[in-house]
Image (cartoon, rainbow, N blue to C red; front, side, top):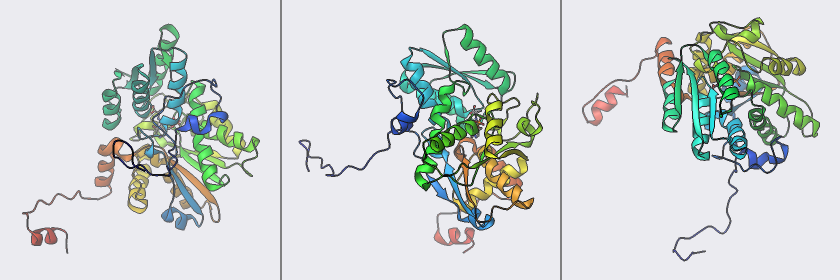
Length: 369
Ligand code: F0G
């Protein structure tokens, strides 16, 4: 077919993913007439990991959430939260963040023409995330404190001033985020035996559990997965049972001492027969590197906590033989290249820094050919 402009168009158009609200609207508890503010988030790949499947003797898939528009799973909840905030007449939105929520909120606020205000812990935000929030037009306010201080302030600000809170204490966020569970089931045909993921503020594990429960109620799955959440050792309140007043980890995305969705997350672990465990920063960075090497999937440090957890459990004698396992890798490696390269160097890697004259022999010599 040729149009008046002379540009030919295909006779059959392929379906373009519409974003999580339009793909799953009837399953989301948001006002029915809410127009979607979307960057066509979701629809992320479920990638089979040959490496981890061989190690476990099971079938391991990675839910690669770094493939979302702003590079993390946060976009799923943010399309919902910003759509509802816009529909309800908000002019400004606020969030506390370790980086990804702020990047996502700023992008969706730009799209919705809302004023984004971001509260972040001073000096603890990866450069890529900070750049995203700034470029999308957020007012970035650094707080001399940690994420937990930022969240308290964001709540207080929203209670006293005309600004809508879009952290995951806003239940609309979890409505969007639960779509990741739907996608996994829609792709695989059923739920897996185990679902492993990193845990910080604990919204994501709570949202996945909501999604699995909903699909179970609808008869779309024959079983619900065992949920296993992994926290950084220096910020692992769900493991110790006590808030951490001074959480510390190089996986800055999950540097959280008092998770907002604590109760929901504990419920998810208990009802699924799952649990929480902690992994050291060394294990997290090692898992990040191995994942990049073996599977071609580059994730940020926090995002590797689920893989680090699986490797740790195998070392401890836990068996996953014959099981199906999904691991959510939550955010893209390009968000924080500084920590990735530090981890690489600490593991004994050398960054290739040969500079050669422009001759093939010199290139071949440098390449060791
Ligand atoms: N992975 C990444 C890359 C994250 O950014 C976060 C949370 C998590 C895992 C943990 O998810 O909080 O739902 O348990 N980041 C938040 C933020 C806190 O502000 O971007 P959770």
